[in-house]
Amino acid sequence: MPGNSFGQAFKVTTFGESHGVALGVIIDGCPPRLPLLAEDIQKELEKRRPGKRLTTPRREPDKVEILSGVFEGKTTGTPIALVIYNRDVDSSKYEKIKDIFRPGHGDFTYLKKYGIRDWRGGGRASGRETVARVAAGAVAQKVLDTVGIKVFAYTVALGGIKAKNCDLNFIEENSLFCCDPEVYEEMEKRIIEVRKIGDSIGGIVEVRAIGCPAGLGEPVFDKLDADLAKALMSIGAVKGVEIGAGFKVAEMLGSECNDEITPDGFLSNNAGGILAGISNGDEIIVRAAVKPIPSIEKTQRTITTKGKPTTISITGRHDISAIPRIVPVCAAMVRLVLADHLLRQRMIDENT
Image 1: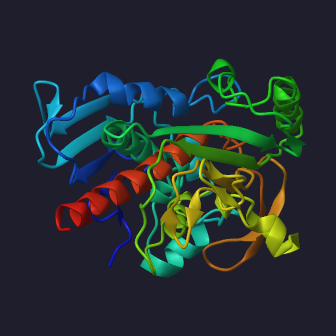
Image 2: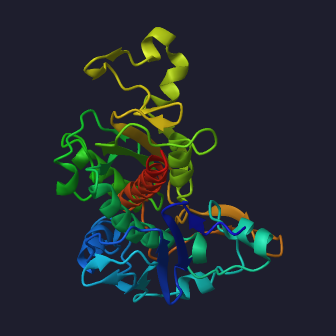
Image 3: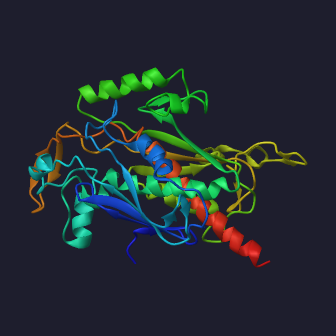
């Protein structure tokens, strides 16, 4: 089956391409009577909107329109349709390289799979597809609000510069959603340095869910951590995901890794709030490794669609890093997973 839908109880299906008419999402399974206004969604879209400092100069207002599923400011329980129209499309730069595969992009694989590809901005493989995910995530947060779950996403590493501290109050006060005031300016300088040499950088985004009740997750194959990993890995620029202590557990002893339990709760959180694929009531902590933006000016070797060797230097309106615009996307995907599993758990509770 085509992989354009995500979730079971809270199901989203996205549509649209980078340089098409519009992008959007259909949300099925959202409970009725939840307060929802376009402004609620717009607030999240603003966080990933292009055209800001240190991001692509493409100027998209990313204004969302609610087409269905909401009446008098409340969800009706019927499918919610959201659309965001593209207003600043310029495909001219892509026309020159439409017969050349861009290294690091999905050009080669999309053509192999479908025998046709939309070369304008990468089509559906473009990071612009994620605008629909962010819109859906804003709706998912309305479901999470019913039980007090809050989701925070922030930058913990960029271009080799790592945060040493985490101040959740600072993440909304800077353009990179950096969690450490001491390294924020270093990260900014790094982006500017890399832009000057025509290259790009990656980083690490951490997402934290606070207030998640114990009991969410469906063993064996729909474990909560498995679904979180799939959700984040479905973002085009993400190449790795870790939960809690992540890869560090491979270096630990069992006595170090285990989160000891007291009547007051867990003494540590190496599990990242998930045990046996089920939430344990502690903070859920997940990190995503974000690769560098593949569209760079530096000359690279590649081939044409006819298989002939050539070189390519990509110009146009591209980000230097997927961070910061990928940060709200990561938050949205975590919200979608938690909303889905929360509703699935309610079905179990109602039948027991």
